[in-house]
Length: 163
Image (cartoon, rainbow, N blue to C red; front, side, top):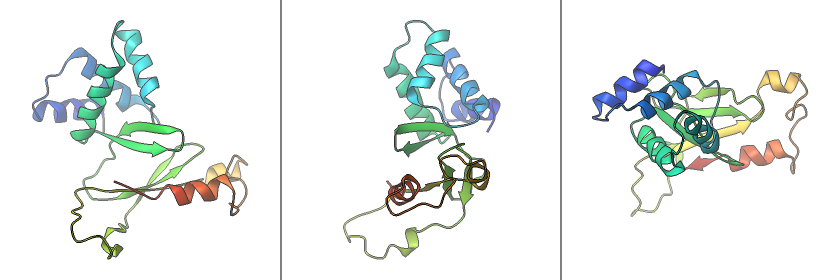
């Protein structure tokens, strides 16, 4: 999703396109990976001195609700990335080393037969964390096979379903 698409989506949904929102759209369109709220704030504050963290975070929430950015919970905290292209429902494989993100076309929701009768699901996420082939070959954090106690095994196990 490029800057123009992000801005058009925001405008079509009735959002006023301010300089700050243009800057956010550009930042996400140009980012190669995930951005932390702190990184986003520091970039924005350099352009708009006196800008509050709350203002940045409010805009992130609005952009997320509009579907132009996605929020992913990593072990070290929340990060944001421009929304994947394509409209079909999918989930993600995320490399913990290079942050490469690949789609998973399978959705586990239909397999969850034992939800309480009184619970109505309105949305869900499913991310699997690990190491891509290239990072494994480079001998990074994912060089060896995950052991029962290793970080790769823990990450994949903890990266399950998030509401």
